[in-house]
Image 1 (cartoon, one colour):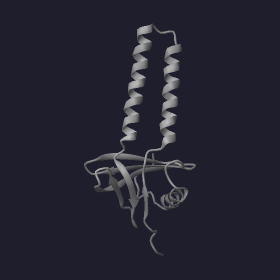
Image 2 (image 1 turned 90 degrees about the vertical axis):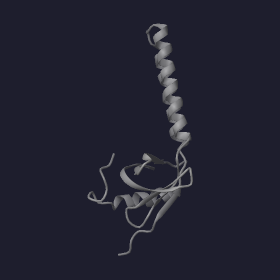
Image 3 (image 1 turned 30 degrees about the horizontal axis):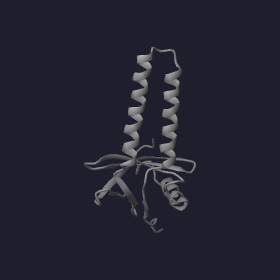
Length: 145
């Protein structure tokens, strides 16, 4: 039996996830404004929600990962924004319908979560990833999310 071919893809953060985050933040602000707390507490909570949303949005937009590749075995490589290729280890994954969430750890660069959704990746790439992830045995991969 031959090994599965390598899978490589460009990565950019999902716009759907960013919009969902902005919607949830807007609903949180609306809930805080409409509650019966004193005005100064509502203002402080609103500012906290807006700052947390801004910080998270900024981190997503400035994603350090530009591309990812999965070799013949379980070896992952991440192409970073500074044009360096970094080996990575698959920590966990989750497949939710058309979405594939990967958590990869790199030495010296921490853990990176990559969400592959219909708006930021090709359907064929996601299908091939789902098929290949299904063949990963529990002893080879770390636990799922």
